[in-house]
Amino acid sequence: LAKTTQPISMDSYEGQEVNITCSHNNIATNDYITWYQQFPSQGPRFIIQGYKTKVTNEVASLFIPADRKSSTLSLPRVSLSDTAVYYCLVGDAPSGSARQLTFGSGTQLTVLP
Amino acid sequence: GAVVSQHPSWVICKSGTSVKIECRSLDFQATTMFWYRQFPKQSLMLMATSNEGSKATYEQGVEKDKFLINHASLTLSTLTVTSAHPEDSSFYICSARGRTDSIEKLFFGSGTQLSVL
Image (tube, each protein chain N blue to C red):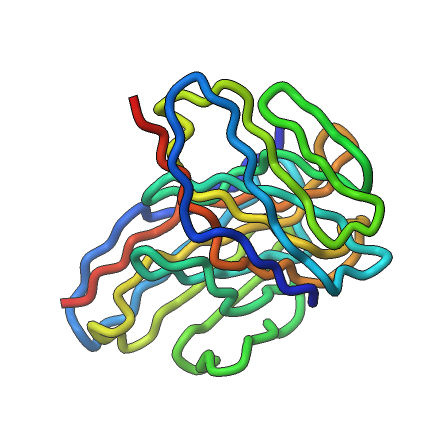
């Protein structure tokens, strides 16, 4: 299973763009990169998933370089409610796979007023 | 979208008693569910993989006789903490694989805070 490394914590101010980078040097060919958000005393929630290049949805963008050994979650114009722990997971996502997705340490993002 | 329901949200029990936590996939079938444990300020730790109709696969260091997992249907997995002790106090979370918008992802329950007195 590919191991991931993220910064333990980050601080930002409301309205700023936040970029959280995750390293996954031993990512496998079949692996996808998925980011989850977790608020205190809640289960994690899916944010975005990608395989290569750039993916964008209504809440975030995910940038993946050609070598796929890292990825960057970009949150545009954060608000106080974006304060949470963000996890990057790497694993194969095709339906039917029984492979687990392992959580790394996550990044505690604190948005300040 | 896919929803995973977990209950109870919190439970307080006496040392030596058993506690059952339920995890249901509400609008999709989940042949595989996962159980995690999370201590304060720490990441999720995978405890076991629950497979419908077969025995669960436990991670190294997790006592299978302590944490009983039953996945009797495609929509329900249960975790029973047997003879609970204070050190079992933790936040337990379940998840299931599902697909929405052509993306396969994990859907998580809301978690169960277990406090053993």
